[in-house]
Length: 246
Ligand code: OAD
Picture 1 (cartoon, rainbow, N blue to C red):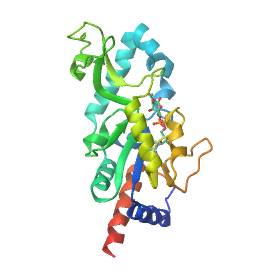
Picture 2: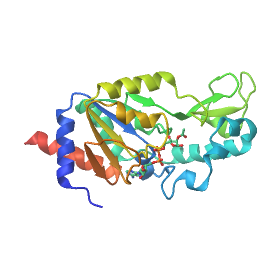
Picture 3: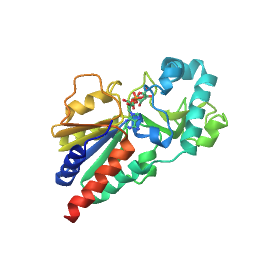
């Protein structure tokens, strides 16, 4: 489906006018980098039951399976790189009033692409620590199934597993930023996972959705751009440049 040019123009105008734009991303932001999402046709949860691999229970009782699942994901993220849509967001942090990126993604691609103010609501794969005491360790040690060098317990990626709390500071910061924003752009998320799916309703300003598929649930969006995140971000960036040159 084609995104209407008038919608691209509209969003470009809103970004230029905004005093505080906040971005909220999900797995759909990274599919064009070659990282699968969770709930689309090719998504991870279509092939694997999250309760089998992504829970505290799995980590404690099925460590081999847990380790294999996260090793494959880590290696894939290491092999791929952030696409040009990520660079557009990093550019807006410098040239427009984009003040924060809140993300559910664990690939660190926003930071790698140059965004500075990023809140990782579901943690990060590469923030490896040990299961028992939280001693930090390297990704290589995790991939090689090494024990913690300080206490000997097993290592785990620094992601939020089902059954775990979100990192509180990131959550509070993201919530504050969203409440203060006059423009919230939500990109590539099905909004099926609690509690992050409450965030869109906390915004008091305009709320825009960029997503390939329709969203279930009762959300209010002031504008919906249905399509590819990478292409839409680049198109909007192009329009911003044209509007500024006029
Ligand atoms: P989902 O897989 O649930 O949703 C991804 C959304 O992005 C879908 O609605 C797709 O239509 C859309 N999408 C995919 N590719 C796109 C593209 N190139 N451009 C635009 N839209 C695209 O992923 P999330 O909503 O991020 O949590 O999932 C939320 C959480 O569920 C994850 O953080 C993970 C998972 O279980 C944990 O592991 C705790």
